[in-house]
Length: 95
Image (cartoon, rainbow, N blue to C red; front, side, top):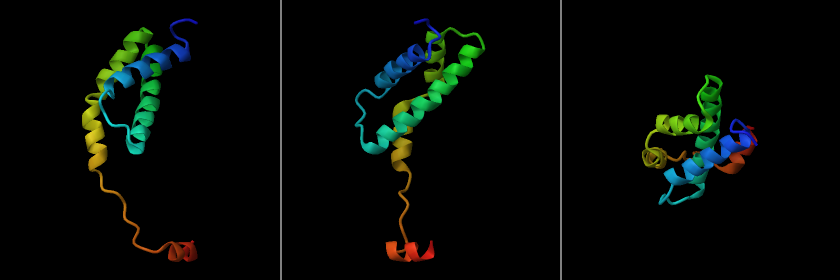
């Protein structure tokens, strides 16, 4: 396996994300956010590698560009939860 292998890229991101989420309670919502961030990071790392940056450096740079994970988790938790204003039967009839 060479350093530009997608598995290696994924391993670097997994490790860095796990470090960033250390101590954060992984509720289902936070886990979803973590997976979304992982997908975005993998895409960004591929872009950086395509521009000539070494894989490990690309992973670190993508994480640095992301910023503070705890702030992202806090922002996501602060988003209002949509409230259903109609009953399920009314929605079924409407659809």
